[in-house]
Image (cartoon, rainbow, N blue to C red; front, side, top):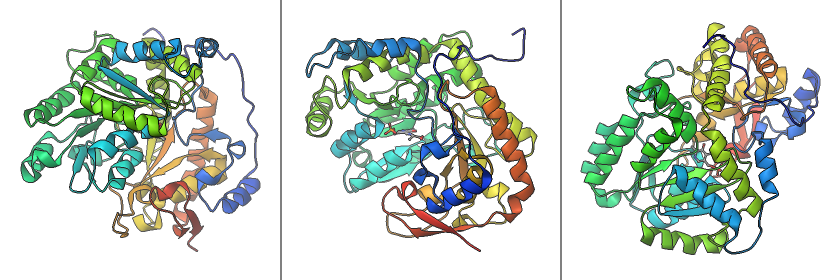
Amino acid sequence: MEFKTVIEPFRIHSVEPLKLTTHSQRKTIIEKAGYNVFNLRSEDVMIDLLTDSGTGAMSKSQWAALQNGDESYAGSPSWQRFDSAVKNLFPFNNVIPTHQGRAAEKILFSILGGPGKVVPSNTHFDTTRANIEFTGAKAVDLVIEQGRNPQSLHPFKGNMDVEKLHDLIEEIGSEHIPIVMMTVTNNSGGGQPVSMENIRETSQLCHRFGIPFFLDGCRFAENSWFIQERESGYSQVPISDIVKEMASLADGMTMSAKKDPLGNIGGWLAMNDDTLAKEARRLLILTEGFPTYGGLAGRDLEAIAVGLTEAISQDYLDYRIASTRYLGHALHDADIPVVLPIGGHAVYIDARSWLGHLSPLQYPGQSLCVALYVEGGIRSCEIGTVMFGLQPDGKEVPAAMDLVRLAIPRRTYTQSHIDYVVEVCLKLKDIITSLPGYTITSEPEPLRHFSARFAPLV
Ligand code: F0G
């Protein structure tokens, strides 16, 4: 490339004003919110890096496509366009639309889960884990060892530990493993990619034992970009072909269209097995809707169909990964510990290391989230002991890592917004050792991180 600056491959078409707040206003606001950023009103947030889920900017083609939305209860042309767009990349026999990813998970695990069952993954996302455990089944994370080490530079830190998976199958028997999942990219493990080779090996192992192998494909396009960048033999392969190859190795998938498909809402469950699909559609009708809209308006189906074509654009993905790296490398260069290599959709700060004066049960990630908000009005997300520490039996143990995720909404913030985030983090460096630990004053179960309330330990 001739120039080092990777420009946004779009210009701004419509703007959303941001409300600017002061340090002292934010101190009061976060206290009222029980020191939980999920309790904040979004108007009180200046840079919202809570999630990349449903928070991206749609393109003018997507907005235009909304007008094609046909809201017929059954058999609408919007459904046909959605179904074709999904099958064009993921040619599974059955595509079942859902209102978001967790609805697909709920349906899938209501059928396949249950007491005595074990569902392995590289790393389950929190809703996936919760939906599995809700049925009485056990969710197991089998990411490779390097995936648990924030400093390891392994190019595919999201990979499944195939040997461990093999041992687990041998140990408990394939009849207790109704399905194996693979999250691409591995969100809870730092947004790290999974190699095609690893997807293939995992698929082959599952098939040897007759176990269905499903992708949690939320960030399929970013994962494909990393395969193109890092895996031998793929540098000249178009993203769409890499996506199709990943899909060809799986028996089905769950998807949140709020991520790489560039929707504000939506998802799907897809599979080749017609009997499983029949059962899934039966449950879909109970809670989501008729199989040709499944909890979505026709206009949402249209926006996702167009989003899927934009998500695999090389220019878009080059920009997307470059802009995430821009933030990650700036923090790394300032000696702020971040998960390396920088992932696709987010930068993960290693709060356990940066706030080394706090023990994991004092929630260093939560403390950093509060500080990012108070200092700079930045909303981030704890992915650590608050999110994963509470065990099904009520015990509390430290999570594998205490990370704080700065998730980058797609096509939403400019480089100066990100420069501001870097500046706030640099300021935090000066006060980091004085940040307090936190205790939980009230918490629901499961998924306590969404609504728990905290108090600083003083
Ligand atoms: N799987 C993964 C890997 C996810 O990241 C998410 C959502 C889901 C499933 C569930 O999808 O939200 O549409 O129900 N992740 C969001 C996040 C919430 O912030 O990472 P959903």
